[in-house]
Image 1 (cartoon, rainbow, N blue to C red):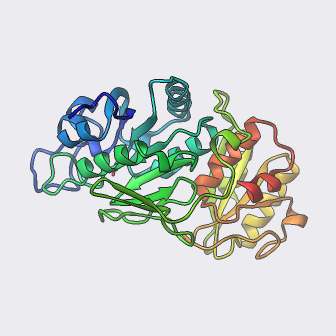
Image 2 (tube, rainbow, N blue to C red):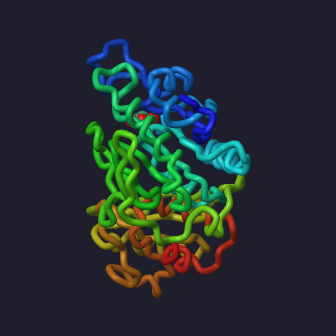
Image 3 (cartoon, helix red, strand yellow):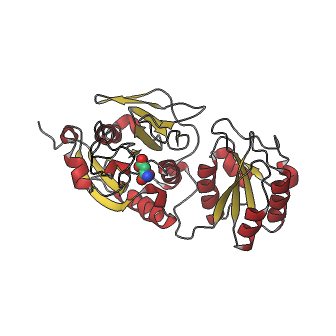
Length: 330
Ligand code: ASP
């Protein structure tokens, strides 16, 4: 086979369970994430050579629970650099499943190119019986090598499905079909080399996004509402100099009265407050379960609290005045 005409895809490895290893092939929960290098991950999938020419880089070797904003800056900058090269046609990022949705959305908003960017991961370590990483990696490279994937923003290829970075979320602690896009559904499918999109992405992303990656990340934290929620955490965050607070509210972003009072006080001290929901699907309507006009808060719409935090950090870093506009748009 003449492979010189195949697309050239950069695979950037960051660690995660896809690079995880256990002493026993029957172990799918007790293992160490992020210990297998990118070359070994690629060697486990000989079929990659029929799909793309691979350029591999080890960006990090972490369990994604330990993802940091400094690593986000390095990763987004490297993706932008690589995509600016004429000899790179797309990028695949291998990642842990735990914070994949946050990194994916961060890249969706800060990568400035139309070439495909695809994240993938695994629920089972590379040493496990029925490890899901090798096929997920092959499918991610297949999507990144597909012309149809261009211009759709950052994608997540997992368990034969293709998700939009904005909508996808991890929904299971153990299942190999852990990722879902609640309310919106998958963008398409990848199976046996065939990439099929069934819908498109309408909200702005990548080149159309007004945001760029920063190395000055504002402090934005998440608090939740629940029975008898106190104001202790909000007051502590304000005292610590927080710039923004995302609330994972009950139901349609409602909040305990005590928490509401603490957040109103925080807004008066210049803290940006965004209401999301702890429910896991649905949207949070402005002036719905809480009076945003009176409180000075912003509703997150269909963004979950973790993604709302990403958007709020980028918006505060770039000095956005009307935060509700940004949450309505992105
Ligand atoms: N803790 C792992 C990680 O996020 C879980 C996984 O990748 O599935 O790195």
